[in-house]
Image 1 (cartoon, chains in turn brown, yellow):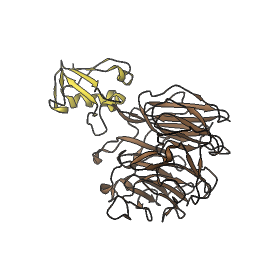
Image 2 (cartoon, chains in turn blue, orange):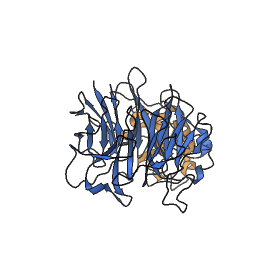
Image 3 (cartoon, rainbow over the protein chains, first blue to last red):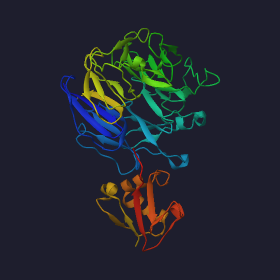
Image 4 (tube, rainbow over the protein chains, first blue to last red):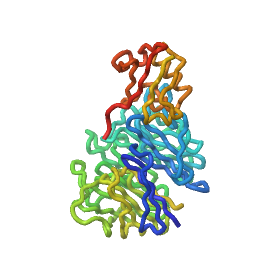
Length: 357
Length: 91
């Protein structure tokens, strides 16, 4: 089995392959000079389709699609993701691309909006129900911008989708996107006068349990939470972590309760806790966390891992991957027990995705 | 007829051409409307979906920065030369 690891960086896309997930061959930069903020993988067809969010600082965002594992890419003539004229706004960045129900691809943008494609990602349409939500004008912007960075379609009910944004919080639809409601009960917004608002929480990432779709895990701007009721309520699972600050949250593709994150010391000290390069894993849904660092760099370590720069693959045991803003990428073939370096000296890593091919 | 000078980095979006002859004239908006129709991939690199010239793209009409003249209403004559240049920006 070959694993393809797509590495999106500030200055290009790198594709790495491995037959054993221990040694990797890293290809040259594609889309050199452009930022790849996220990579979507639609592996429901005979071959995975890759969808790269290509963000040119001068010439704007776009989505490029590959059906041959990155050998060639195609872009439509018209902008694949664009706001309708009546909105008066333009897409600044594409933060997330995710396969939804059969035949559907979702994309999340900055400013915060959800787009839906029914032609494999070549063109997208604005999901009006969320865009027209009365809360939208009150959604804030994190330092990275106001964006929908998390999209979690329900695995069996196409009418249910969850999205999340920084300083907006979690929203859900159960009617296919027509109506949306905030789902932040129990998530603290310490930076607001009322720390328990209906919305406005700074959610950094939400992951859905691989075995139970009603179990969700959220890494917040201070705060790590679990929901066991599909987002109706959230409970803290940060007690045994060294810090409740960080960006990524990744769930095992099939084992219940298995999740990973990469804690940082604090909002004001954005470096790994104790200056050690460590991933933290829980196998019981966040009640207990354990550090995983075998094979990771020793000594003081400062780089951070961004929200889209950590993922798991669909292998057995699952592989886990993360990239840093210092351009290093690490892989584990055994669910985080041991790690090897995939690449170093790349540009800042913004996103990683791994898939068996 | 007006001519657009295409920077090297965008020529792939214009079929490899470095110069595009435009039939429309009158204003820069009219010229870009023709670009929208004939070279849509080039058009969306220059302007966003609301029609605004992208922040880090500069458009000069007969040597004058259109942002300092009349923007998209900048007059374009049949002999105008329109130069599209990426701004000096990036990291």
